[in-house]
Length: 339
Ligand SMILES: N[C@@H](CCC(=O)N[C@@H](CS)C(=O)NCC(=O)O)C(=O)O
Image 1 (cartoon, rainbow, N blue to C red):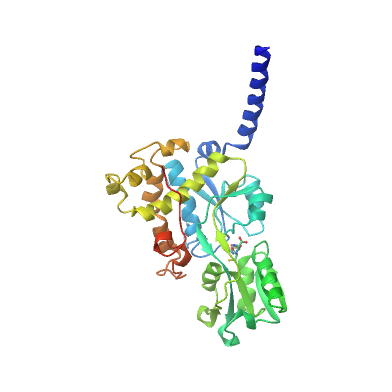
Image 2 (cartoon, protein in one colour):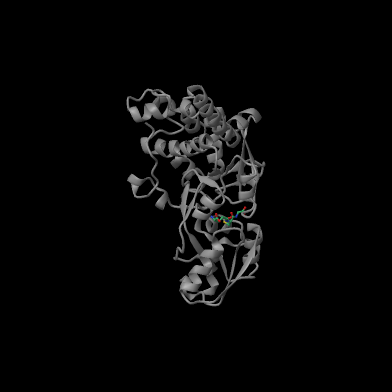
């Protein structure tokens, strides 16, 4: 009787382990191939866009580099797959990419129905409107009857519909799959309004013929928490991506930068010692080395450094920290502690 019971338990455990093994394994796959495949946009300055030498740059790109540094100790062990908004979730679900880091809004439908896990928020955003200054419009409430240009496969169409309907205004959507087509259409005057995430407006404005001829209206019509995404079913990989993000945010809060990270290893602050792997075995619990966060910070910088370098006030996008400031500096950027 006892033996039978043990056998049955063994079979059950075997079955459940087989399920786990089939779903998991992204870290092993990534280690085997020697790089992370990261899904990005097709060119959104400040977030993910190739420079004139073909090197990918931006906040979303740097996040993938930070994960590569955490996994391999090398921020260059990552390859980028440009994806349109429409293609991105299929690419992630099919395993074509290991992480999707592409100005992607965390919504319930994407998280639950599409079977994805959002690792957190890398940039808190909201949808806005851009118009030509010559139109003389100062509020989105004056847009009755407007032709509105936007991207297909994004959160923007539903937000626009909600906004116009709730204000009893008419509008006509002119939508394209590629963001460059949207900008071109708007720039050529084929629509009155360009709508997308406000960070997207700041980025795509740089691609217009005369960026100064356009103005972003004051209304913010939605919540667009943008963050990195992985597939359901691989908790270890989810943890790695999630805690890399938290490590970058915690590093800023603790004053650890790419410049002082070596010096900081001598700190007596236990939170800094745990972050940098001087105390505890946090990296090993992720299946990495205890230098995981040290490597991410050393090679890519803390969250504030990454923000300032790519989208901050001193960049062409010129985005103030706003909601993306740390929780103790007037924003809502907050990471759980490493302990
Ligand atoms: N955050 C929204 C919008 C994302 C989106 O695709 N935005 C466009 C306009 S900013 C874009 O990424 N364009 C760049 C590209 O397609 O390469 C979403 O997740 O649906």
